[in-house]
Length: 203
Length: 210
Picture 1 (cartoon, helix red, strand yellow):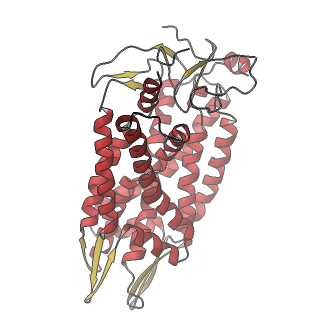
Picture 2 (tube, rainbow over the protein chains, first blue to last red; picture 1 turned 180 degrees about the vertical axis):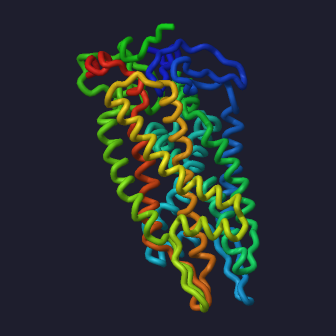
């Protein structure tokens, strides 16, 4: 049976016959109100460009410090990974692990794996090795990628110590802001489009 | 309007890739032909798993709020802050907007999440037909806001690395932070284990399901 004829609401199990949507149209389930699918959004080529961009922004956000703090002439700068290691060193390893996974490992893995899949499908016109496993991994990582929460956390941290010492934002924080925006677009990307792209390639 | 569900039509949608497959009763453990994921009509042991995560989260919620999440020490003073205490400090320092954000993210969201999941689990257990659309919307909201509770954890991690001037001033993470991190992860796992399709199942669909 072909997959594209029916669509089943993930939230209430109602079956619909798929209708073609135009740009910016979204199909919702009539019974429970959940989103079913969207009309053509960004093209896969655009997505690949966005992902390559976000890889560079990710590198900048991690290479430069996020915040600097000056206290009586002594300056402390904090990078993203630096704060993870600091948390590790104060004996709260669980927190450090959680932060490392949600703001570093998962977002980076998402960017690299999507770049690999899209690059292989669009540029080499070949099914990427390990496609199925990577797709499962991408789906499972999605809810655990939390760069946007970390960004707001950084702002709260700056305000908290503003009264105590001289703090200012460093380039890494701006890069993190851009990265948050890019990752929001990437996380809204419907992974089913990749399954479809692979199926088209196989035909 | 009459709705036909996939279960009634003998269809099995794949949760992983969205492919709609035909349910062959002769196959004991069906797998998706496209992505190889196991196919189920409903998530397995959804209610039981969800309860387990939720109870664990509710228990840990107490140490998360009672124990200090942060320990600030300097030459002049030594201060231990709980989550609520940290919000109070923010408020008193005049950043009421951030105090509000942290309050919503670390106090309101976890409590509302725990209560709402209890409501969802109880009502599906009783197969109640009460406010189904509202409950479905509530579940979608829970999935959306879940990760924002991590906010305080990240604030602590950053403060620990920034305010590190040895004896002059130092911030260290407290045991409350670990408990709070566990609460956030457990409530996320609880809402992921819950199957929203159970909200809509009539008693007969439940018994006919294999």
